[in-house]
Length: 115
View 1 (cartoon, rainbow, N blue to C red):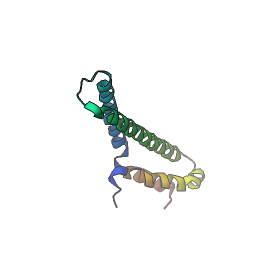
View 2: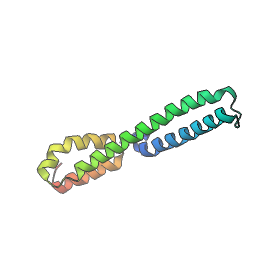
View 3: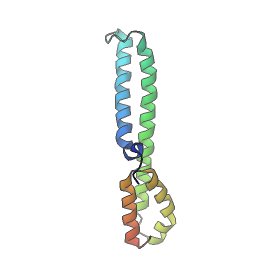
View 4: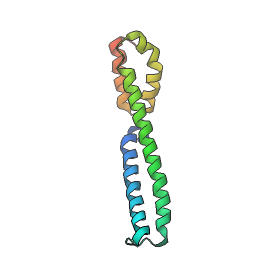
């Protein structure tokens, strides 16, 4: 069963949200400072919405990267006993990450002879 779109493309989407909202903040700040873009009274609203969206994108990216990093730590384990102890955590992270991480976990489990 395929994973949701937001899970499969979390890294790309979070970066896109951060970039687009960062651009919106820059335009709003430029409009507030010298009214060169003609946003009228909307520049303050665009600034607030852009800052909120920027924070959401950055936090989403940070949590995604932290999950990937933690998953990689579990997969780097060379001891079968230590891997078996942490396989539940690795499976949970693989469930929260895109499908390719579940495939990597399955290959690691197969190399250790686990189901």
